[in-house]
Length: 203
Image 1 (spheres, rainbow, N blue to C red):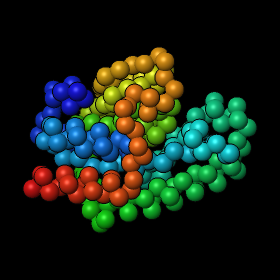
Image 2 (image 1 turned 90 degrees about the vertical axis):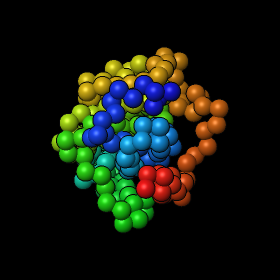
Image 3 (image 1 turned 30 degrees about the vertical axis):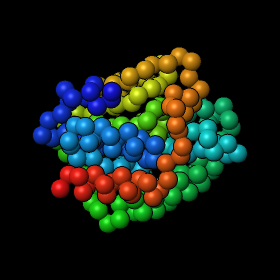
């Protein structure tokens, strides 16, 4: 369904990026349907101290970072803790990217129409970090495409991209997994397999 909505954006300069890890499965399917190059974009959520699942920020390639200023201030996270968490998550992100890439070069995004795909948006922190990094690579256009997201996330992210495609904007939203019949965690090994499978199909 997402691929169908994105057909109008397919050109000779279209590439797809899937946010790791969950977005890789969605990106893989969309890229196969549109027959365009794709890659994984590794972004790490920066969780609140004592609550890893609550994102106070996120870090992308080249140490691009976004913070949820209102949230970390409400939680009382000081600058020292922010710096410590950023260093830790930046290292984790770099190691994970090396593992996923297996020596393969990243796609050149300059002058391209870049479609950023995820399996859904909750807080939007990792998505925003991904968008900020993509825009630093001088693409021609940035499209955000997701199956589902809450209204506040759509409102927050829409001004940051040229187009936002969301199949279902859901007010009663508590987790991405509630909209899937099957939502098992994507493993690192699966990410690598998806990337290799697509390379073989594309040859």
